[in-house]
Amino acid sequence: DAKTTQPPSMDCAEGRAANLPCNHSTISGNEYVYWYRQIHSQGPQYIIHGLKNNETNEMASLIITEDRKSSTLILPHATLRDTAVYYCIVAYSGAGSYQLTFGKGTKLSVIP
Amino acid sequence: GAGVSQSPRYKVAKRGQDVALRCDPISGHVSLFWYQQALGQGPEFLTYFQNEAQLDKSGLPSDRFFAERPEGSVSTLKIQRTQQEDSAVYLCASSQWTGSYEQYFGPGTRLTVT
Image (cartoon, rainbow over all chains, first blue to last red; front, side, top):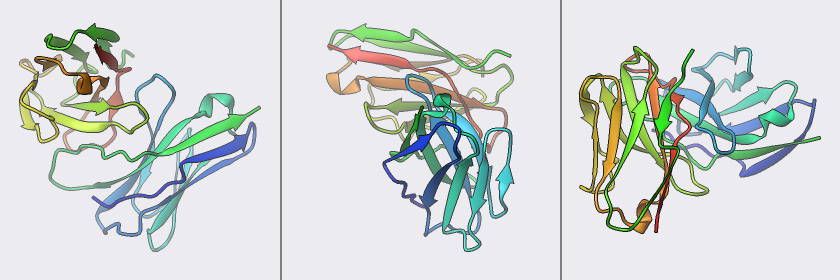
C-alpha cells in the first residue's frame, strides 16, 4: 500500500472550514483514498473515500488532485465535536484482507 | 441501529494471566477485524475474519494471541500469559461486505497489564 504523509497537528477556529492535507505521491491507479477520524477514547469513524473524482457527503468533502498525489479533506464548518485525530489511508481495491493501515494522522483542534 | 460493541471496556491483568476480549459486530456483517492501538499511535492490524474463516492473521504479534469467530458473528481475542507490552487498546471493526474498507469500529477494550 502507498504511504501517506500528514501534518502532525492543526488548529481551526470554530465555524471556519478545516482543510486537512494528505500527500500520497506513490499511489497507484487502483488505490483509493480513505479518511477516518478518531475522537478521544472512541474507535475510528469512517468519513469518506474517493478514487479520482471529488466526493462530498454529509460529513465532509474530499478533493483529490488530478495527478492523485495528494488530497484534502474539508470540514466546511468545524465544530468543537470535530476535534479528533484524522487519518488519511490509501487502500488497494483488489484481493486481500482489506485491513486498514493507519499512520499517525493529524490531530485537529477546533478552537472556540 | 446497534453498532459494534466490545466487552469489557477496561481490563487490568497481572502479568502472566490469560485474558479474553469479546466483540459483537453489527448483525449481518461478513467481515470482522481486530486492531491493536498503543498509546499515541494509530491502530495496527491484527487479524481478519470472513464469516467464521480466519483469512489473515499476519498481524498477530506472537503465538500467545489467538482469535476465533466460530459462528461467524461474535468474535473473541484471547491473549495468553499476558506481558506488559500487551498493554494497549484492542479495537474490533466489522464491515458489511467482503472487500470493503468502510469499517465500523467498536469503542475498544483498554488492556493494562501490571
